[in-house]
Length: 305
Image 1 (tube, rainbow, N blue to C red):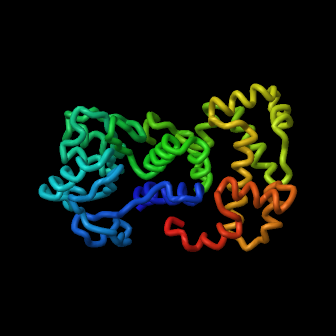
Image 2: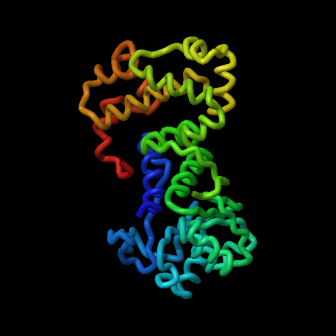
Image 3: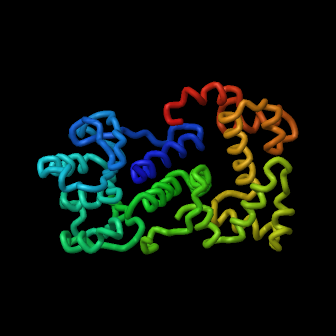
């Protein structure tokens, strides 16, 4: 369940944070019937494993007893289906499914640390790594639920930028400092603190001053940096000026208040540091391409919320 949620809910959160549908997915099962997770919860599919399907990415999520549940004929169907997608991935024992299909031969891959020895013995032609997740060309594998979360944040970062990945991680209060190649026991504020602690410290200051804004020069002063150096660090790390990132952070906070509370727009404007309601509405519409009131009205209608 955690592995499935790590894949699906990160995409859902990315859609929510971005305010538009960046990701769209369908859930497939081997026979078109609900898949009962090991915790007992049934997961209803959108469709069965139709070999006519194609798309950007096929993600195979598997857990215990994959040998029992995936027959040879089903593996052949999976293999044929994989060739219709631009990328394929195995989540936790999904890596076993890919290996059983012969799709990991001579490729770098990983699986859960408890299964590493057995996996290596059974599939000697796979270059097994102890990493949290591994990407080798168009094939990726992960070591479990938390590494799958790291992988999805990485994919969000690569497709839509570091700031969005940070915001998705923050939505789950996820602050892991792990990178892909960390040995099992990436993309989050924790990792940013390791890579560029001065940018992380600047972001923390911004978070503390959402309602009463702080200038870029004051942030630089508190961090013992010049304004030019602070701007350089943000450009190198986030590809955004500090002021633009700060505005984005305030607007993201405002949007959460618009959608998740019944506060008046005037109160939301005050809480996110805007001098007036017209200024807030103008900036919100420029960023999200709709008025705050429209965003609130439509929020309950979003299928990815």
